[in-house]
Image: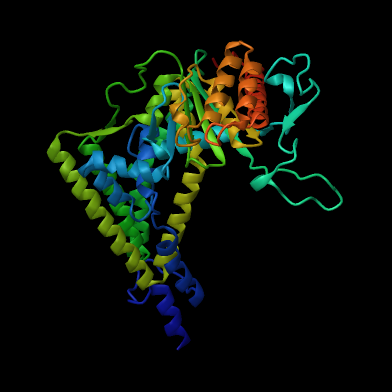
Length: 485
């Protein structure tokens, strides 16, 4: 009975003897390894966006040793109807990311969700430590003190600098009578500057030779050899998966499937630099501000980056059919391994772990880095943590080269208070100190109806915080390079 069980888990449920004699394996190993690939190697909902993002940055179609279940079908859909597929994939990749063109006021969904995410991931690594914005700033950051002004030069503005009333009120802290700290909702602004790499790094011929040779050896020698070994060992499901991967590479090479860049790629059709803010929604905690080279930023956030080209329409249709057929073969093979068990499951698990190791070694940030090098671009990244959303948005508005404020409408509703706040920021950026007159107008409106009344202390505080935020960002950026605007 024991020998029968050992044979069952060595040769699988079909008990097909292999040409290569293999030792007996424990029951738990046969059951466990046969299920892991089917459970762990499934494509997620973001599979399509990952396909588009990786192809957009690589500039070519790349197939791993063992693609996740669903990747081949996604490529088939891409080849069949690239426009619709790109729209769906981009929206899934960015998870609905919205881009606000601060200079021009336009608002649109991110066109290359996954590719922009990979760039942001690289920028987050380069940004390093987050610079914390101070909770308090002096009043002279927003105006010049005048004689008899109710607020002296030593007075500070910030969260917690006044006693809130109404809905802003909080219970007093124990042991701190008469104090009521205001609620803080910290916001992170990640400034990503993309610029031309005038001192371009020397090309790495060894790197291109290494990766080119590895890909060539993988297609010509490694895949056929491993497929033959697994077939001799009785791991027929794994052998079919490897053979499918090999055939797919060969067919793509014969039919000359190429990834092309569309006309106008990386070109700038507007004057000046870009200033585009991106966030997952209007109430986000983390905001990414892209500034600098408008051609690169507009391409990554607002334009299509890739299209497929082959020998002709028939070749594309055949490739779409083949990728769908390869997906079906992969599905059948993986379910066969789960039912067969035995050494087939062990070989497939090893193949899956090898694929993961190769993908980890390549790294998602490596794709973004290599794309920047190929396009002769470089990024500088900085992270700042603000005490609230209004100081962050005010800083972004001052960093732009325009007074356009319609991009703020979905985030902060248009009202008299916002208009006065923007006017103060604009005058402050232009160097015209007329903020006191604006504050005087705000104080006079306190007795007016609530639709036009403006809290002067709120206005003065947020102008001061936004002005200090602008100075803080400029100081950190100019410490390492030229000013942004």
